[in-house]
Amino acid sequence: MSYEIKRMSTEEARLHIPDYEYALIYLISEIILTKTDYISEINWEECTEARFFSEEKELHFFRRDGQMQAVEVRDKDGKDEIVKTYDLANKFQAVGKVIKVKQYIDYDKDGQANIVLTRLTGIE
Image (cartoon, rainbow, N blue to C red):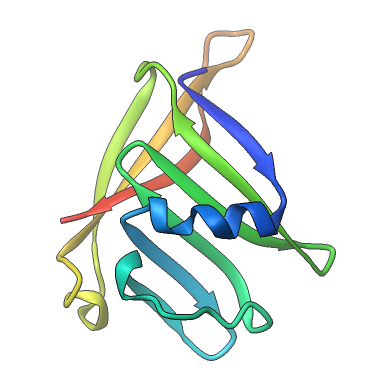
């Protein structure tokens, strides 16, 4: 695999948020896309999902069975990856014009390629 996943407690993961350049936070009342440096506080009770990301890694918070979980995805060797860009909606263009997404590929027993993981990598 060209990536590695590390599961961690949400308390530990929150300590690592400043290590990432950008944040995409889904709250019940709004969606926030910004540089991580601009975040002063996160209402975790209202948060349904959050992604903190930089070129080489992503920290993903998500709810499972009503509990917040956290995983970190890091690049490992750079093989079997596809990088795509997607235009950002007008309301997010103060941050940038496009968001970069990396897709990791693995192959099944028949040699068919499958996208097994997708993560955010940056904004341009």
